[in-house]
Length: 556
Image (cartoon, rainbow, N blue to C red; front, side, top):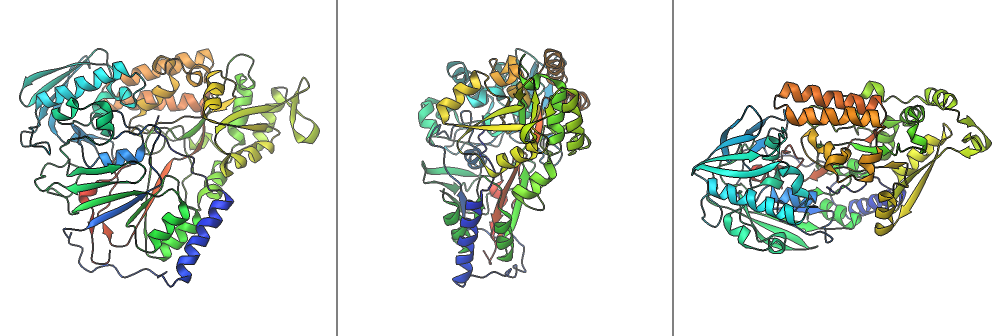
């Protein structure tokens, strides 16, 4: 699972952040926007300094097929490359290491024509045999370690056939219309054959050889990463503006856990690109902007932050009227504005808006406490002591497990539900307890998410056939809804036309909201702040960045 830490800001964090920036202003640092350089011609040279929140020391891996940590994937996108790319605006699959492709009528064979002018950074040629080795090696690893994150991208893969040095035919054992998009992702990047002679652990720690515009010079877990420009690079994706080697000479990545330290260093000009996991507090945004910073943001593709119900027999949310009441009890606009900032987007459905085939459900997600109260009355839950709802002497209490401390957002949802008489109990658990609690389905509401720019990603969360019967996927639907959802998931995998997939996934989104088996809470917006002299930043479809397009102006 792609980890995306909860983007809520407690009052304490707000105060820490504000005090750190106020101190910077008191120290005489500029709080007005500096003038931009008159010349916008890209300049060669310099080192871009990036600050991330933290490293992942639990499952450290820089191997593209093993990696799931978003910050690692940002770095890897600029070291290793894929057969295809995905247009970040349209979602269309476009050429990269492959110049073209054909899909068989039965959807089981993908034939790629490869570029003939690409080499790995160690001098090995990029060719069909290299692609075969990469995919077969990944399949072998996924069979040995079934929990591997990249396994979901390789679903259905059978074998690769080298047609000629620059033509590869990939055979699937079952239709997977999401496979073409998978070939555009960081997780299915192609490493040099030499890389697969290394152990998985060695690859995890940076023993990687790719075709990208940067090479991985060093990686020190919990400290940082250094990338170095590749001087002979000349084969970017069709989405990249810079058609030659990177403008930057190097990239330094630092992990800075403490927010006040991270923000203070950015204000003092010691960091060029401030890229934490959580969206910024409004007070930070105001001070960054006053200092001339650029605020860069994009919703991460894949599911929004949804809560999923436990609809098993005997659970409160097995009642469709109670689920409908819950949906109406959430004030999503107030959540976005109150927890994040005035301009933060309000969630519109079970997918974030950057996900291909997104279909807005906003007209069904309005805040309606009166309608919720009416539904609860009809379901037999009537007001009682303290304004809580009761039925047969039992209070209407829903349990949501949390790993770690509760957040301001959790408390806000708790307060909103209280307005209609629903008690939300936040069960704060340590890691081991949390997993056991969820596996035993002792919850009423649960959440999970992954980041991928294709709607197939939700199947790896909500379809029991693809989740090894996880408690969440098994209990998320009543039986009749599950059957409908699986039929739509299957159609989304079988149908390789954009029109067919749009129809299937549009109907799926309607189903999830109409049957109230997904409760969207917020859009998973990723934000970064850049110094005024950082130019050329653009997002990839995965929510990463193409560092070869970035250059540092004179005012950097």
